[in-house]
Image (cartoon, rainbow, N blue to C red; front, top):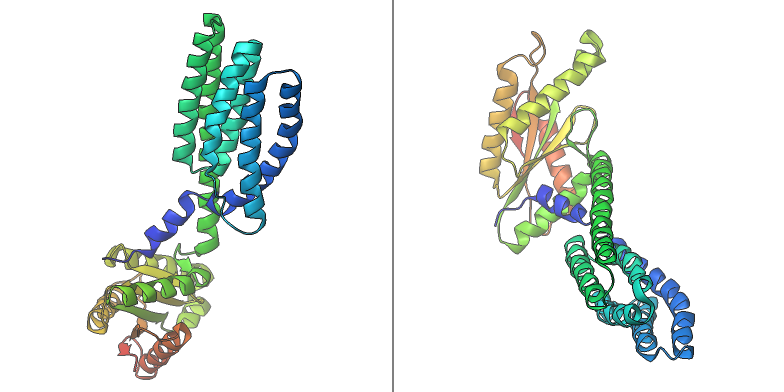
Length: 336
C-alpha cells in the first residue's frame, strides 16, 4: 500500500468542523434544553399532548447526550435521531396551528449542518424538507403555502452549502499557508516532523521502507552576495520546481532552512534513494537555473529505521550532508 501523507492531510481538512462537532452539539444541547422545556410545558398546559410528548422526547435525547458529553464521553444517542420526534411534532403542530409549526424546520436544518458531516446533513435535511412538504399537503394547506415551504427549505439548504463552500475554501487556504513555505511552495519545517512520523509508522505497519534526502545548495551565501537575494530566491524557486517534476507524486519536499531542504521518499530503500539523489544532483548541476548561473547541491541520504527517533535520523542525514560538503560538494553521501 503506497503512502501518501499529502492525501492524508487533505482528507483531514475536508471536514474541518469534525474536531468541534461534539463541543458544538454540547452547547447547543444545553441551549436547546433551556428553550424546549418551557415550550413543552406550554403544550401540555394547552392540552396539546402529542406535540408536548415529542418536545420532551427531543429534550430527553439532547439532555442525555449533553450529560454524557459533559463527562467527556461520546453522545450515546446519534444526533440525527431527533429528526423522528421533530417531524412528528411538526405534523401534530401543522394539524393544530397550521403553517406556523413548519417554521421549526429551519433552525433544525442549521443545527444538522454543524453537528453532522456535510453529506449526512444534506441527506437528512432534504428528506426533512420533503417530509414537511408532504405533511403540509395532507393538512390541506393552500398550494401557494406548500410551494413556499418547499422552496424556502430547499433554498436554505442551498444557501448553507454555499456558505460552507466559502468556509471550506478559506480554511484550505489558511491550512496551506500554515504548512507551506511562501517562497518555494515546499512544505515547511513545522509540517516535516509530523510527516516523518507518519511515514515511519506507515513503513513499520506495512513492513516497507522510507528514506530521506537532506540537501543543501553549495555556496549559496556567495550567490546571494554576488548576484543579490532576489537571484538567490529565484534559484530556490526554480530548484524546487525541478524537484517536483523529477519526483513522484507521493514524494514530498520540505524547506527546513535558508537553502536547506529535505525530501521524503516513501516506499524507498537506501539504494533507490541514492539513485534518486544522484538523479536530482545531476539535473541541478547540468544546466543553468537562472540566466547563466549554474549551481550544485550536496545531499545526505538516510533510510528510516523502524524504531529510530526522528531527531536521530535527521542527525545521521546531517552528518552525511556535511561529509558530502567536506569531500568537495556536488556529491551524494549515505548516512551511517
